[in-house]
Length: 252
Ligand SMILES: [Cu+2]
Image (cartoon, rainbow, N blue to C red; front, top):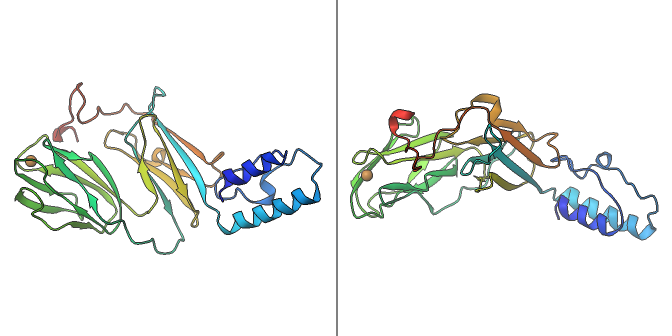
């Protein structure tokens, strides 16, 4: 049961709960009970629910990314990094960065450190895929179909992809030290299910974002109602495939 469920149950009991600071949402000091007429049964069930929630403190974090004009920014990578945590679970398998219509699909792929990524070529023309992003650099010489073994990305960071034949082909793999990640939708939002593992930060990245540094990181400690808003201050680069002018290698 997560915090929202606890909140919902309490509301049904006629109680108002004001709480939900991320990661500490079940702390007794975090809420104020407006109603003062708890029955013994209500108190009993509250304690049961609260203890259960303490054992499994899954929480949701809603992340919103907006540009300097307040417009939502879709397709932004979002991930949660935790310190003082144990080893991450094994990375996902069957992860694919495809090549379709002389494009990398998806344009941006987010993976956990240690993930094996397959690079099938679904086009009828051959591609020669490479990255110079040290230390995750690699080369898949001219091929069609599934000619090459998957590439394992063992270091966190941005891997910029290109093709030796088609200069307009540009893609990214963001390798993160986390198993909690995703990308914002058209509404600029993403909700992540997160179990706190020590101190946690939520971070964002996109090739369109020019902002640097702390603007792109938020501590989850003290986040209001489990929601985090990133407001960017720099003008965004245009989307890679936009009609307003596709980004070329020279733009980076
Ligand atoms: Cu190509």
